[in-house]
Image (cartoon, rainbow, N blue to C red; front, top):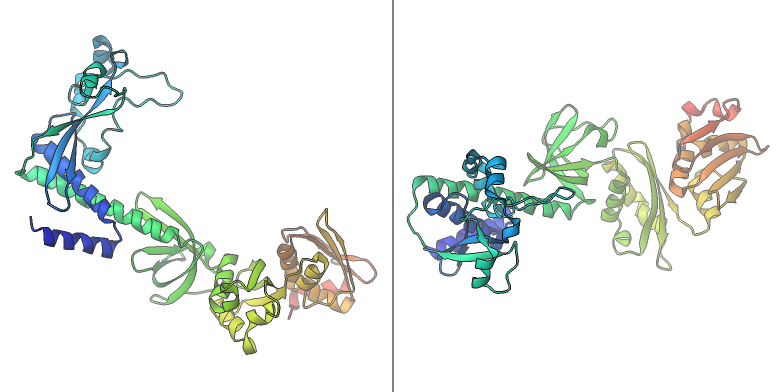
Length: 426
């Protein structure tokens, strides 16, 4: 074996596919064990290999499981419960794919809640406990005894093919695991990808190493994507499926807006400005409450930027979605007042225990406080977590929401509500 070329190939696999050297060597050991068993092993044997990376030499071992006599089936039970034909079913595709796990898939498994199963003794994979104690005095039932095997260097075509399949399968599994770990760490972050194709309104993005999906329900309303267009999206969730990795992206999640602000506003990234709360109706409007942790830092000004350059960059990325940036306050009264902006209010009454707020406003400010189709008050309720009741100067209730921003009651007779469909905040 050309060890230098072999080591170079390992390093290349590790660099290009992100698979650790230990995982590759483990895969090689599985392949060698599979090839050895194919040509020189016996049915039912558990064979393992130990590969020395430095010398290129492989040693082989047979593993037997220690079992006590009272765990064994009687001869009659063995014939009844395990017909002779079952003994011929060991060498399946699973044996090729998962040869290293053969030990765990043996007959000793006992499922929780079931009556303990007796073991059908197989001299190729079991050893009686009293005999095992002659080899290792303190061995217990269920532990392994290892027997060295003669090293072989010549393998037939079928054994070589078996080894190849084991290597390919395990390399694919290792690559999948590596990618999963890489992108799992990035869950909740923004990623950029090129639109590869669109099927049933779902957009598939090429991320380089794999393809992610931006489902229709995670797309901003009225956005249209072109093949080859590069777009940003939030890594919303990661899943392992039989077909491979499934990465779900989102452009509607509130965290997408938060991560855009982190990218554009250095004060948020270094912690001097904190986004305390966000309420979003994707594609239309968002309210963001920000707070300064350092004296002298203007949280709203930092997010807006000089001449609005920072916030405008984010608005452009969001396709023109309007952004209301307000200052968060520990004083709930001030916070709710800020949240209902740009409307100016007369008074506010708060019940902290019930988390309810009653806001009084002049008639000419009611439409601003409520917003188009109630959007402003909905977002204010979501942002603050308070039920909000907006009333006119005379005390007549105009609109009510719950703490999740759902409108629970409206007074459609009020003259200020008649034209809400045609009015919009700011």
